[in-house]
Amino acid sequence: MSSPAPNLLQVRWRDEAMDCRDGTQLISRVWQPADQGPWPVLLMRQPYGRAIASTITYAHPSWYAAHGFLVVVQDVRGQGASQGTFQGFEQELSDGADTIRWVRKLEGSNGRVGCYGFSYQGLTQLLSDDPGAIPDCLAPAMAGLDERGDWACEGGAHWWALGLGWGLQLAALRCKKLGDDAGWQAIRRSLDSGDFLAEGFDLLKRHDPQGMACRWLQLPASEAPRWVSHQPVAALLQRPMLLIGGWYDPHLRGILNLFALASAAGGSPLLRIGAYTHLDWNGGLDRLQLAFFQHHLQNQAAPEQLSAAVLFEKDPLTNGKNSSLHWRPPNSDSSNLSWGLRSRGLATIDVEEGELLLDQFGSGEVALVHDPWRPVPGRGGHLGLDPGPCERGDLDRRSDVICFTSAPLSTPLELEGRPLLTIAVRADQPSFDLCAALSVIDPQGRVLQLSTGVARTQQLAGEKKLLRVQLQPLLAELCPGERLRLSLAGAAWPQIAVNPGDGLETFGPTGPHHRVITLELELADSQLQLLPLLGGKFGAH
Image (cartoon, rainbow, N blue to C red):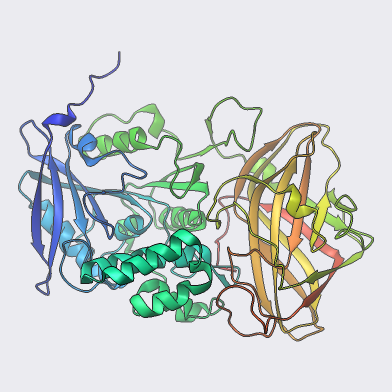
């Protein structure tokens, strides 16, 4: 028998002010249940406006309040109605601790606190400068601790389109708060037209020069010591934790690293990875999240949906033979797979010439010319402005894309893990990119992209280097008659900036000084492996 529907119309809200330790006042919106309290608190701390409350991915706070929680959504420092200057994640350690102490004593609170939120709101849950001021349980989604590897860079290259788009969103909020209507309009026009891909960095320097995105783009993507990697206190990592990730979300590696870190610290985190992009969660996980908080904050019995520590969701878009989504535990058997790459030199011209050989060594050589006048587009995946699975047959037919394709499968093949390509490359310029895509080809010839990755490299011109390209973790099932394909290119514009070839840091699209780059791939030492999904640590490159 199903439980009665909550009465959202009886939920009331009010705004409350909190004074930080330095006197800065932060404003929160509080949704209060209709019945008699006190109640446990659900806290979200975010920079986008407390009235929005991340409803792009979550149910409205009134839904949670109607289930017996005091829901608090706070404008972080310098955002919304809160005072101060927005400095990004660096401000959240002290403000986060102050807020936890405050909500425990808030009118209507029973002193128990859970945190939830995704992206920026995911990391704010994990930051506190006081081990005595941490939540009782938390549900970080689509976030990570490493500002370089989880928020700004991959494979030694900055996220270009995503990084600029997010940075300009924050810059527009700054313009709005300052009353700079002209600046807000300039940013909005640039985003709507797509011009931000070329002019976005200049807009950031003009309208938000001290913002996180602007600072990140001016840090070398390959130099980890100059970046911040946050380290939560052990007591927080040991708290009950529900971690949510998406196969097509750029922060998935951060969620997997956080799961490993919390487990190593003695915690027992729950992990759910679904067929989600950053903003599209296929109906969301509010029921699961509610059950998690009811168990840990309202002392309700744990339902069956919380019994498994790790569950993955297959994607019907990637596995068209499945009629519906379903969850399953991890399967380590599929992570023992490896392929060699073979070509007789024509894998760029003939899309079917290159071979992907299961459990065999590679052989041969093939040359690839990257022409910056017509860089290969990046499409879909986890770094695209159009995230998710996509058809890429037209890209594979380009003569500046190398394709290696397996024979048709005779039996089903499940792919679960972290694809890693190891390949020897020689270039005629001091720097180059190698962009990889893993796809499935159905019997009708449709090429559906599953996973992508990039490696940006500097080396002496003519020097051979054994290069490793880490692709986005994946879960996919191939059917008999289908084939697996690995595609390699010298660009993925605008997901990453076009490499100029001169060894210098690059900002944006191709320009008059960008060089033609010739890559020579030696395939004898090549290997595409599928590493265990929950093993090891992900890095930026």
